[in-house]
Amino acid sequence: MVKYLDMKKKLISCFLIIIFIAFIAFILIKNHISGDLQRQLQSISGGADKYTSTSIDLFDTKTDIVGYSDSEEQFAKDSKVIIDKLTYYNRIYDIYNDYEGVNNVKTINDNAGVAPVKVDKELIDMLKFGKQMYYETDGRINIAMGSVLSIWHNYREAGLDNPKEAKLPSKEELEDAAEHTNIEDMVIDEKASTVFLKDERMSLDVGAVAKGYAVQQALDYARSKGMDNILLNVGGNISCIGGRTDGSKFMVAIQNPDLESDEPYVEAFEIEDGECVVSSGDYQRYYEVDGKKYCHIINPDTLFPSDEFAQVSILAKDSGVADGFSTALFNMSLEDGKEFIAGYKNVEAMWVMPDGSKVYTQGFKNYIK
Amino acid sequence: MKRNDVILIACLLIICGLLFAGMKFWQKRNTDADAYVEVNVDGEVYATYPLNEDRVERIEYDNGCYNVLEIKDGKANVTEASCPDQICVRHKAIHYSDETIVCLPNKLTITVVGGNQNQIDATTN
Image 1 (cartoon, chains in turn cyan, yellow):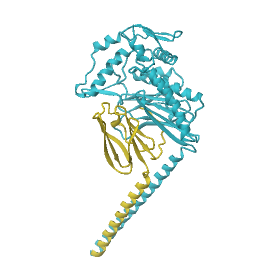
Image 2: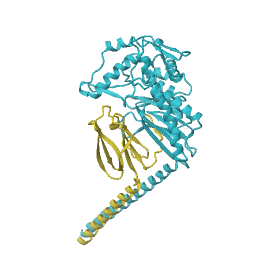
Image 3: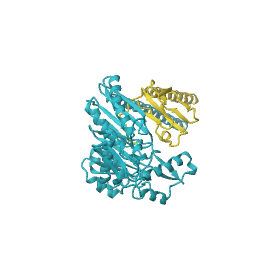
Image 4: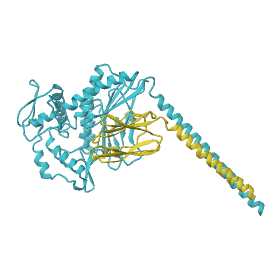
């Protein structure tokens, strides 16, 4: 009997030791593998070094320029050219601030019903693009909706400053403002290079297209200056020239709209030269009233924030189109959005529903595979 | 047999100890010892903190606003802030080279320097 107990003890200790050895082996192998992965990731940058510059002075958001360059000086020179260009666009597209000697969108708004304002061709081009977006999206994007958007802007700012007192604008207030959103009242005189808002109560809000449009202009300019291997990310409006210097492509990710999740991204994929990606969602800029979220994207039909989706992402060849269409799709039902996007070659979409499930166009799926 | 039991327990304890030391060693090797975050306020370098030392820093501004930066397990995160939009607080913890957390209202940027390279070049938001 005693002998039997001894045997049992020996078996148990043997068993324990085996478990420990297995555990040590597991840890060693795991670390070995992750070390390999680390080295692999490091080699991705290839010969030239990777540089990043971050700016927080543009378009009320974060701007990153990522470049693979032989020297830091070269990268600093290139990124300054792009930043200078974006700074210019930021000023002329600004609806909140005045700049010495600059006529911008705010100047146009301030002169609504008063007088035409002489502006740069770059601003007229953007407004024309905005008008074109209005027609293409059947009014789902309306840059002449400033009167409605400014009401929401003010309620949101007040609600964020004082969450306990957060309120919703009344339907009457919104409908009254919506009487002054006719895009045809924005009169562009290209010969005289002026813009005039006929309706004194109307105002322009170019938030749905200006950032993406500026990204496209800045990258086109950079390309004309011979820049290569550079990626631009202005508040999530992403596009690039070329790829990494080792021949691989730039890798972009789509942020997970569920910020509580441990998964930071819902998709990650490589983009080709000139490809543009952008997401619209309800998870970054919003305020809460009685525990319900109200995001910054306002549906022109209902005059209230859209809540059909957590996020819509667009893949396109033009950053302005990508920016505008992501907002437009955010303001459509899934069915309407699918039908709308099917009419465009080279524009693909991905929807994340409020429950986290994902819907892709076939082209989007093929692209990220 | 009592003596053997003691030997067995001692052996197991030693193995445990070795294992723990080994794990710590590997952990150190895997987090880049040189990585640090650079904290910028209004374009000026405010401070730098190594990523391999856990700490909590309260960054305060003249106007009474603040951000709380926490460094834990090799990652930097903003855990609390006075800003109304709270975008910096909702941002994920960062540890890859050149990753940044930004607080626009407080003109704050926190950037990782010298960490491991992220394979992802840009993220939508």
